[in-house]
Amino acid sequence: MTNPQPTVTPDLQEPKFGFNSYAERLNGRAAMIGFVTTLAIEYLTGQGLLAWIGLY
Image (cartoon, rainbow, N blue to C red; front, top):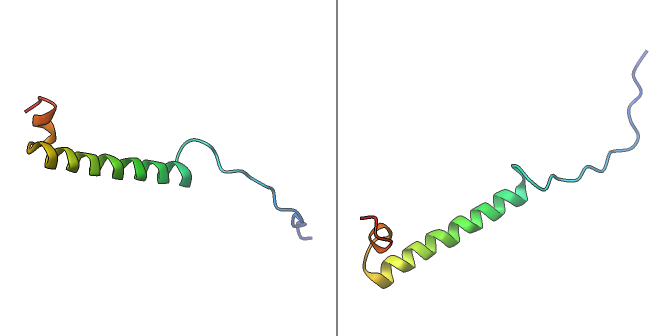
């Protein structure tokens, strides 16, 4: 005797938090913006980021 297979695939929505593709894409974009901003600060001020914020 075989088990019957389901005929309908459930419509599962992707979670809005945790490790999902949207959160990872957003995190990657924020990291790129932060990196470019850091490079711009270093170029415009002639100092590293730590010196610019007073930690070095």
